[in-house]
Image 1 (cartoon, rainbow, N blue to C red):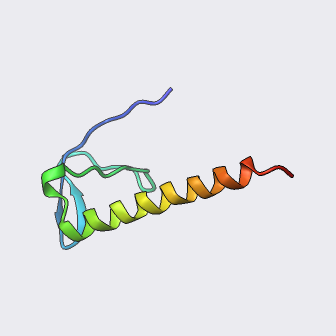
Image 2 (image 1 turned 90 degrees about the vertical axis):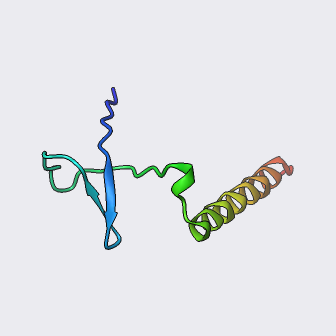
Length: 69
């Protein structure tokens, strides 16, 4: 069972700083989500490039798997 908790944060000096009065335990795994309007153009281009590479890789893998052995 997975439970999620949303904590707002802000980037200061390149580091995400949670906006809460509670400390997160050291080693806590987090996922950072950006509002679409706040994604810098360069980062958006990089994400799109990774998505395209991923799509091309899956196409390549599917082609390899469909070949008779």
